[in-house]
Image (cartoon, rainbow, N blue to C red):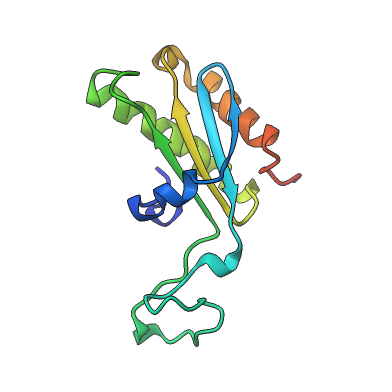
Length: 139
């Protein structure tokens, strides 16, 4: 499972979709956006780089890469199946997290029929989308 710090929270979700780029494959749509490191702000609204890093200040610098998986109820009816697919997608992203460039907000949107995919096929498709978006580093 992808660590919570690398998942997009609801508060950043609209920002991630707004003015993002779009790539489609047969089973997934992928929306992504590169964010500058200055986007990490503290509660006062100032950039995290300009504020001294004191642990008692009560804010945490945003991580450089965040992802979300969206699976509609219209796509897969049963919640258990949606959660299984979400966990699989997060594990694929976590496996490739070290190869992903910094400053990325990415959202994978599942299409109908994605539940029939095997894990290996799903992994090829997600990694293919990341390569197509030029998000993976050449390692």
